Structure formats: structure tokens, C-alpha cells
Amino acid sequence: MSLHIEIEPLDTVFFRDNRPFDAGVDTVAETIFPSPLTLFGVIGSYYLNVKGISLLNFKKNGDDKLGEYDPTLTNTKLKIKGPFFKYDGELYFPPPANLWISGNNTQSHFIKPQDRKDFVWDITVPDLMSLEIPKIETAEPLTHYISMEGINHFLTMEIDNEVLEEFTRNEDDFLTKEDRYGHTLDTSSNTVAESLLYSARHLRFKDKLQHQDILKAKFMAVVEGITKSDIPDGITAIGGEGRMARIVTEEMPDKDKLVAESSDVLDKIKQNKRFLLYFLTPTIFQKGWYRDWPAEFTDSIMVGACVNKPAFISGWQKSGKGSTGKPRNLSKTVPAGSVYFFKAQKWDETRFENFYSKYHCGDSLSDFYQCAGFGTVLIGAW
Image (cartoon, rainbow, N blue to C red; front, side, top):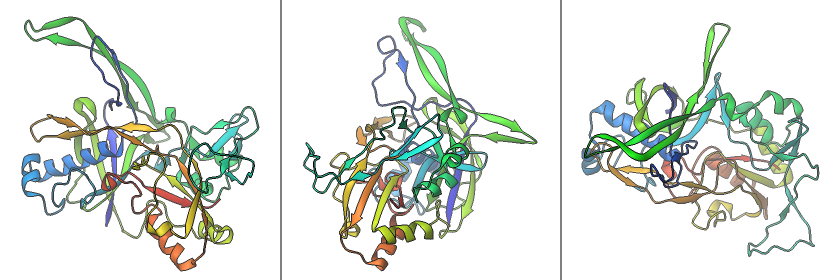
């Protein structure tokens, strides 16, 4: 069994970005969408609190469900996929980097590899083809999040105007940003230190009364390795300043993937002998945006990649005494929503079906923090 865990902030929440911040010097602390590391820490800490296990004891002795303490998060029994937005009972995923729109969100444009013999790259990546940007002047990358139903259309590249309108939402539909202000105390006098004011940008998740139901925005993650009895519904701290959030869990059969495998997608891939990887979560590759793909990719070559600016992610590694600890190394990640394109050099239908089943919303493709939710992909056709 796996768990679908909903995390509903009860107050504003704050997730620090990677930039240094000091009151009186850099006076504004920006907030970001939480990384998978944040959700992994929230869920792991909540489990330990429910079981009455201290972090120090877990580091020393491990746990039957969590296994041995592994700071690299590469081989832990607890595994997550997420975080994602959930609103009105529907999951929403990051906008694919190769999906552009124009005409006030009424026209869709797919960026695909183009076989142009006259194009010469200034980078040494074999077999890479150029990507052609839409020629319409008003075209721009999609910034809206796509629902589960919309993603099913995207994975077969069959998004029309009605899909864009019905199955996408702006981030503003989920949350609003609020500035909070504070100051630093002079410890010698316990008064406000001169010139040390600061502000922090918090996120407030929205709710709305619709008919007789209250629609609330929340985070959602899929968790493996523990059961509902290990994580009962309750309240926990999340993000900077330890703001409160409600945790609600639901058990799901292991065979029910978050995004189901699609016979339509598979049929189209088999017909064209081409597929794409759409990254649901940030991913860390040793070589930046490029990587040496695992053995399952030996039948295929990467011919294109649509990748936005890198996202820099760190994290806080607790020492076991209160909130003390140290920051994790800053990592440059391929951002969620990135799309990589592949063509088959030779075709083995059974081999590809096994590959599709393994990686479609399955095993991580990240080189680091695989168990913490990095490197989750969906496989589509192009």
C-alpha cells in the first residue's frame, strides 16, 4: 500500500529561498514553492513524533519502518513523490516547459525537436536537435498549472483551446502572498536593535465556499514505506517558523499510480518510436541539465531538451537537538516542468513497455535524493 498525504496549512507558511538573508542588510526574505526535501522532512518528523522516537535515537539505532538513518536519502525505506498542489479534489502539476500559449490562453503551441541540417550547436552534445520557438509574436510559455485530466491530454500532445481553459489554473488560484515584518533584538538590553528591521514573504493558501462545500488549496504527496496507522491524521509544523498544518492520509493500492499508465500514450509511442520525459519534480544531475541515462535508455538517444533556468535547492539537516542543525549543500536542479525528447534507435516492444512501467510516475531519475521525491517523471509521446 502507498499513502496519499494531504498537507493543509492552517496559517501562512514560509519556505526560504537559497539566497543569504540578514536583517538590516538584505532585508527581504523571499519564499519559494517547497522542495521535495521540505516535504520529506515534514513527513519523517511527523512519523517520529507520532512514534515518540527522538531524532538522535533514530540516527543511532534506526527504525523498523524507516530503516537506517541515511543523510543522502538514496536508499531509505520511506519514499515520497511530490509535492503537488491539490484543489477542489483535483491534483495540479507544473506547466510543461515545451507548452506555449497565445491569444490570451486560447491557442496552444508545442515546442518539439526540429531536424535542421543548417543548425550548428555551440555545445558538444551528440544527436541534439534544435527546438523551434513559435513564430507568433504573442506566444509565451504556459505558466498555469495543469490538472490530472489536462496532463493526460498533454502526454499525447492533444491540447486544444477547451483543455487549456478547463484544465489549467494560475498559481494565484491556490495561494496569495503576504509580507510579514519583524525585527532583531539586542540581547544585551532585550530591546529592538537599531536598523535591524526585516520582512518575509509568506504564502497563504486560499479557500472558497462553493455551494455547501469549502474548497481548500493544499499540498499533496505520495508516500511509500509506511501505513495510515503510522501517520494518523493530525497537526504538524511546516516550513520556516514552524507554522501549523493539518495532515490527512488515505491508503491506496500500490498498483494505483498517481498518474495511471495510458494505452493511448503507449500506442502513439509505438507508432512514432519517440517519447518524452516530463519532470514532475526538481531533479539533480551530476552534469547540470545533461546526464548519462541509465541502462534502460540504451535503445534510445536524447534528441532535445526544453529546460528552464535552474532552480537552486538546499535544505536543513537537523542535528537532533531542537531546530539546530546545518544547511545541506546547495544543489543546482533541473526545474519541475522540464521536458526531454528521445528517439528509438532500435525497437523492442516488450523492453519499452517494461521501461515505461518502471519510470512512468515510478523510479527516480535523479542522481541525488532519489527517495526524497526528486526525479519523478511522466512518459509521453511526441
